[in-house]
Length: 163
Image (tube, rainbow, N blue to C red):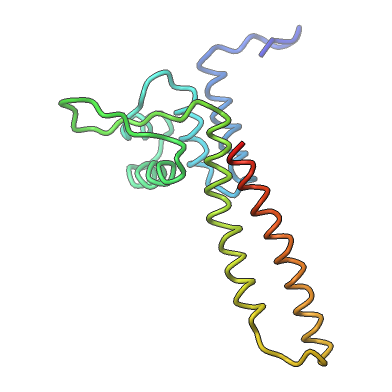
């Protein structure tokens, strides 16, 4: 980030803090917690693996919050455990390949949202009814259209993850 004529140059620590804050705020737009996004951001810009204690200290979060967040990031495939012989603490490092990060996010969101929605739509579409009833036809027609869109989206996201 280049300073403008009017603004002073940011230090590296200030720039990291701003990135972590921005990534965290953006997390709400992505449907994840601010803390999850901040932990991910911190690990993205950290050159070395960090322990849960490091995360707690640097982000001023509780042990429970840090542990739950780390578990979720591990489930998403966005971070990995780094084993250190003789260490009792667990250390974590972020996936740094942004293409792989994107795949992990798409896979997790697809599993959590699209797959769940498709299952619900399939159950609702199986509702028996009278095809002569206008209300039933309208309901079934809307569900069918949404199911088709969900199927196309599913195929597109699957191809995108494979790209």
